[in-house]
Structures are given as structure tokens and as C-alpha cells.
Image (cartoon, rainbow, N blue to C red):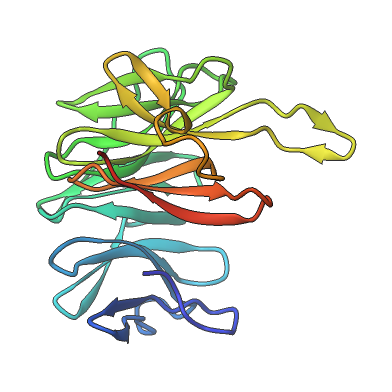
Length: 251
């Protein structure tokens, strides 16, 4: 699910049973839509563009597109939905007010920011309403991967030596995967810091590269999803440096 249009206007679609269905709503979002998440019932969430700079979160359910707002927001996006229809995303008002939200039972609430932290990010939600994301421990400090459960954020930290980390997916068992980002080591010409995918364990964040069979020819860079069977979707580079998508399956 993403968008399909060779022009500058995005149009969200759903691909199911070999067929692509356009779910764009010109009446609500004249400048297009982009879909970011779907659940088992076919409910879709994403971003609806009011114009070239302002956009709102949307829910597509039962063949109908709904503008979730939040009302009065200048920019907002819904990024994930679970099988109970609970949605997470973020918003920004022209006043400077911003935050991450949980939409549940028709009500949108702002996720709390832990004491001493400057902000949070939400990227995924499982069927237990546990949210994977990141917290910013204090102003100017890079993000740490985190999980929100029972009304409390838990800091998952970073891989040793990494600059920052973010949790991008969580399954029904509470397994969390994401990416750690290392410092840039070269500036002329610029060379970005390496990305390392991780899974959260009782002993901390573990580099997924250390858990795969040696000699595959792949270097994993980013973990973007995990299902309830523990399969993990990753981005990787092959031996020639070309980007690939890979699926990790537990033994």
C-alpha cells in the first residue's frame, strides 16, 4: 500500500487478490493521499493532502474515507493501525504545538512525553495496543528506541557505539525490531553513518547481522517489520553493494 500516479499528486491504493483499488478521495483531500498502514480487516490509514503543504491523517474503512484531523492541525499523518482499529500517528499545529497520537474508539489522545524527555515518536502498534517508537531523552540528544505499554514509555537504549536508534515494528508477543544509526565518519565526500538492524531482547538490543547464517552475502541495514510468527522484514546490501529486501525466518 502506498501511492500510484506518475504525476505529482499521490493517490492511495490497496492491492488485494491480484487487483489494485484506488481509494483516493478528491472531495476530502484534493491534493492526493498516501497510505502507510493496513490491518486484517482491510482498514487503511495514511496521509491526506489538503494542499501542497497542509495534510491530515485519514482512515479508510468500509469503502469510506474519513478525515481524522486532528481538527485545526496543519500537518498530521496516521502511520499504523492494529486489528482493533487503534491508530497511531503524529500532528503539528501552526502554533508550534506538536505530538504523537493514539486514536481509539473514536477518540484521539496525545501520547505522553516522559519526564525529562523532549519528544516521542510512534511508528507501530500491535494488537495489545503496545506502541513501538522512540523517545528523545533530552533536548539535543538523539533518539532512543522505546516501547509504550500500560501508559508508560520504556527506553530500550541503543546498540553499543550507535548514535541513535528507533523501534519500527512490534508483534503480538512484544518483540520489537528497528534500526540503530551510527555517526557519520566521512564528510569530504560525505558518507552517512552505517545503519544496523536490531531486535530487542532481555539482554538489550541485538544486531540482527549476528543472528543470521554466515556467508549469505548480505549485510542487513534496517529492520522494518516483524509479524506474529517472528519473521522479520529487512533492508540489506548484497555483496556488490546493491540494496535488497530480505525476509528473516526463525529456525
